[in-house]
Image (cartoon, rainbow over all chains, first blue to last red; front, top):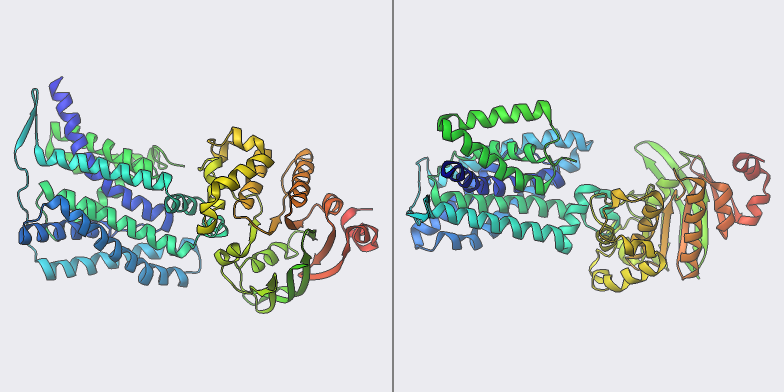
Length: 288
Length: 236
């Protein structure tokens, strides 16, 4: 029994990061129609900004949120405005844009990664934060992972409330359901696309900040998180934000169960799940 | 008073000209209908007036101001709202959220509660189901919601594109009655229709668009008497 609960909690601890990671990608795909292969690079940048601020100034890494968020938002906004928007204006059709934007995203992946290697090098970095265990009855977890989970849930809830209840959040959802009708309501659709991409980058930055709390980081870590984010988004249903949130936790639990038997097979199991999903239920659990 | 004036509009899709020298006007408090067959260019005309498509030449004037080529959000802001064909509701949003989207512009957003109450007095059914998702509504309820959402920006002039398209005859009649009710409450209406018979019943004036050209116009009574309209559209 304790083993089961332990696995479940380990899954949630992992799932929190997955959920935050995937929500950004889901938003970018659902509204801006960009399958952002470079998503993981924004996570890496968020992680390195946190690491740099913490190790040079000693500031609490959780507080780096207030720097990482705006910086990544601005980067995302500029990338959309100057690269993807230009590409979109030149694309003959939305379908053509969906294809070519993926290639452009690939390009940004290498540019961001090269710049990061230039600035931060290739070494594995990290710092230690709250690296002790907490006990809950017979259960034991590391304190920093618990903090990650709490912050991940908080970020997801705040993000969900933003989408559900604010003027801009409602406009984002409306734009994802029918962009042309949204523009008839007076929504500036190009601005909304840029905001969505920027918010996606911001969520990636938050995920990076959380990852750096407990895991080692390096400048080539991005791709693995991109792939996990894509799996989660497909699991939850393309374009469904709530699906990505829940999908993140589900994949985390799945990963924890697999790693109970054989930790080395976790990634392989993710890919297997991904392929089965694509064959059996490509619309995902909450897909429209 | 002249509310909308369209003068000598020419519109192209690529090299193909779809509107030829189209001119028309709408006066305050009127219901004006533009009739024409499928493919005559009706929706293109509305899309041009509301800023979705840019004209090659010609002008659109609203309450004395030149609005030719302005983007859709600025046109909404000036007091024009547009109900596109099929209503184009946001399917995964509730009635209330759909209405709120109608008040998206900052000025309207502040008064959205008052506007919503007003819409609910026109369409009490919407109030009962305010939490329900748009995709779960019946055809008639969708129509009410689409009209209600149109009113949420506090427009002076409303465009309705193919209000009757795909609706059962009873609903068509109800929809046109709703239009008259809105007009009686001070709204000016420009309507696009394939259903010539019934739209002429409620409209004050009408224009006939064929192959991108206005071929005839006049009061509804005049058009009902015209040989061309009787033969081509009323099947008499």
